[in-house]
Length: 392
Ligand SMILES: C[S@@+](CC[C@H](N)C(=O)[O-])C[C@H]1O[C@@H](n2cnc3c(N)ncnc32)[C@H](O)[C@@H]1O
Figure 1 (tube, rainbow, N blue to C red):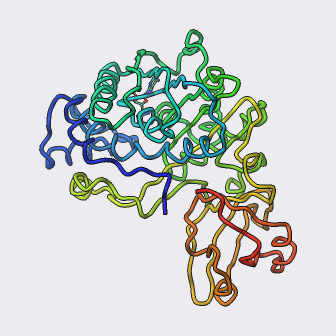
Figure 2 (figure 1 turned 120 degrees about the vertical axis):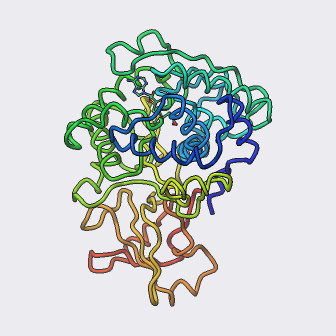
Figure 3 (figure 1 turned 90 degrees about the vertical axis):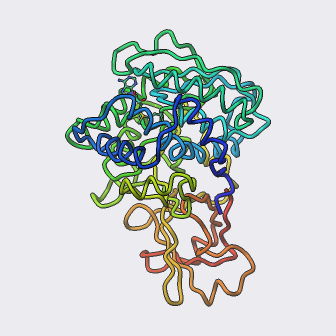
């Protein structure tokens, strides 16, 4: 179902331990992970720096390394990556889940010219350098992957990016959350995220992209989409996930938030026990993301001429029908659009069925489908001949 998502190869386990410089018994790792998890939630829990690094390297790296794959996959599918060896810049790189995740998600034909990783934590950056070298040696990354250049820098200080030059793929994975969490409400937090992303956009080449990953939780995702509105007003283009530039419809209520949630993606088997012992989920992968550009190119522009929509919920199957929420230029009463597929109608087709479409999928909806399938303005009743999944 997630053809764009390459599962974490078992060989990473050894590469991660070697980069950390020690093996950690699983029971001890579970304690470190539980404590680091509480710290991520803003709690003041004691954790030795070396144990925090162990948790981040051995547990969070293999969990978070997949989160950038949809954004990179969509850029590649749309032909929206520059046609040259890419200069990659990772902001708040930590031990490298986002930058190395992006490298492993790139199509093999795309080469990488340089990887620059910025973080305030030199110990994490040292692990990232060793991880990239180890992964290349173990054939987990392309043999041509360059050594990572690291820079210790505080991303909250004005002018942090002035001397960094331009890059084709600028990444900020689970970074803004770290220094904007303290802001009281989502409006203030979104404004603080926008300040950071505005500076990050200045480092993006004319034909490059800025990929931002944030946690999939309600507060973080909503703050990211507040930042999105501010940056659109500044003149930035949203490439993805949105297929429109209007305000995020999910900000209209307090209950919703636009995020990714892949229920069928589990942690690598060697970490499932650690997650269970630490009281964390071992199944399901959630995150939110935003891809910004300066050149006006959009994912929507790469889609077929029909109306582009994105599935923004899981399909909900009940007796006789399947329902889902789609987001795009066609809006329903709530801003996004409830779609309904009746089983008796869907059975007539050999094409895709709504119940088989994963959250996040891109869909082309024909004009006739919109005109003929209106259902009292409440939901769009789908006719299988008038819509189709486009990607993945
Ligand atoms: C949750 S980690 C995410 C690391 C990595 N990007 C990933 O995707 O796994 C957040 C990183 O942001 C870094 N960070 C937090 N505040 C920072 C700041 N003011 N300047 C630079 N880096 C910062 C932390 O040191 C940490 O490595």
